[in-house]
Image (cartoon, rainbow, N blue to C red; front, side, top):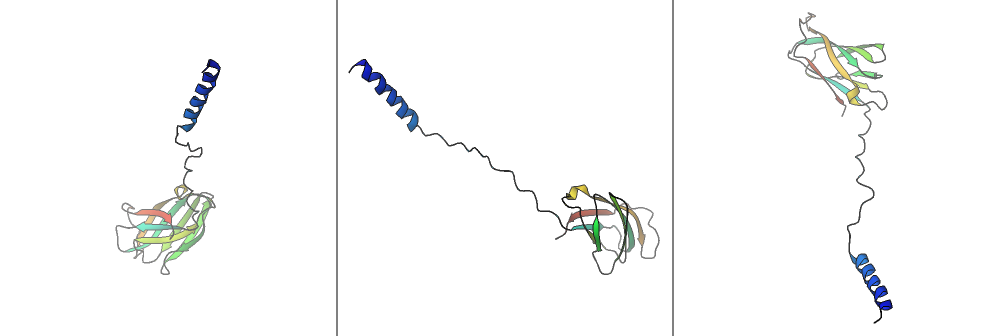
Length: 144
């Protein structure tokens, strides 16, 4: 064989070997990030109380554009006032128990983390103001 035939033959063999080696295909598109959670249409504010004779609670709700406040129990009365765009004051009166106090509609696109609630005052069922709000907690969660 002449040299002119060997060079193309060796080149063809290298090309064939290079093409025959299997490589793991690369994924040009890695797994996409998880979809954002669905929008929350209703939020529930729940009370945890160290007492069993609460008759009224004053709550300050901080967060964007709170609307459509509704009591969680037909035995409760609910009063609300928004002194500013980021604050709503809520009074719930009745034979209060640990559990849901009220619900509200959050601002469109707002995350639950944008809201916070604080117990300002509590009165017992005999209308005596409690000396302290220690032990009272509020939780904010998406309504079921």
